Length: 144
Image 1: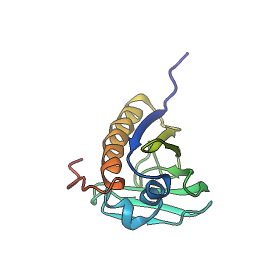
Image 2: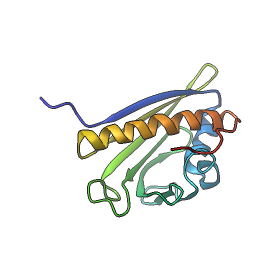
Image 3: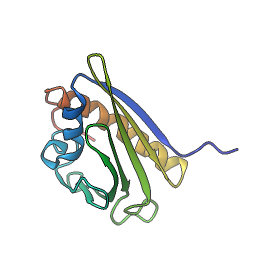
Image 4: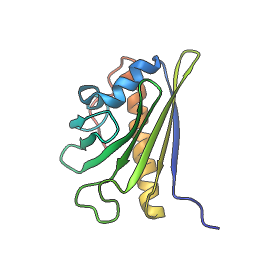
């Protein structure tokens, strides 16, 4: 049986769930750790749009929003036939733990192993930046 093409990443963040949630839903906070421009409408059916410094633009729609606990949105890249906008699903759960929040990310619906590996590398990079920004630090310029 083939291995499922799913990215699963977790990170512990030294901040409460409400703070972390804001860094996932508020466009001004998103660009502190990922991308250079973001537009979000965090409600089911609302827009998710992220410009990665002109290199690529991600687009999707929120499918689930449970403030301070969970976000889910369709995801894909404009102009990309292998992972077009809305073709995959990002689910993020926030679990309050002693000392902060555990972020559990699942990205499913990826087309092949190469695409899955690329997104796993990206999420690993960006979740480490999120952990710094949401805890009040400055992750510095994005080198990815």
